[in-house]
Length: 249
Image (cartoon, rainbow, N blue to C red):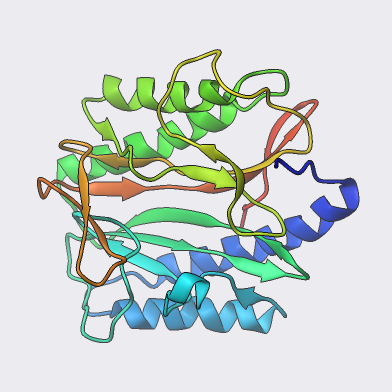
């Protein structure tokens, strides 16, 4: 069931999303050679707790950390570790969220560690731009497929591919609510978009093929062909005047 949020609910969600966005920014600012992914996770968790919120990923279906931190050919759900040291030239995707007074925020971004390859830079730029293409298509009266179609069309024009096996989602009193929000699709198809819908839009884009595989840890998702992957995400609300991004630092 899709839940349309009231003004009161959105006020609380905005705070959850602000906390999520600030935590992501702090973790992203700390990306540099020699830092471990566990340290980035610690920075994010410390901030979230300081704001009277809780990390919504931690213990979610058994996930052991505050953030998912994925490097290079890791698409999503990389588990932070004291043994995982970030190196110059890496691209580091951080995905995290906070729950505040029962409402969730969720966001992600990919960060460059020092100088990165031209291909990695182009991938990051294209993935970031595709997120905004998807958000721009999330208008009241439109269709869910408009979002995915806008993302897919832009990504494929850049010569990259959109991951199919994992998608965006509704969000509110649960981290994952209906509807699923694919990053691919057909314009004009799917459910009608309505004011009060809150969505987490999150394109995951590969330089190579869109096929992925899950590692034996049960969480970390890799590109099957070893190609680079980037990930950006915002939580938005659909309004009569257009989409509004809630996860702004």
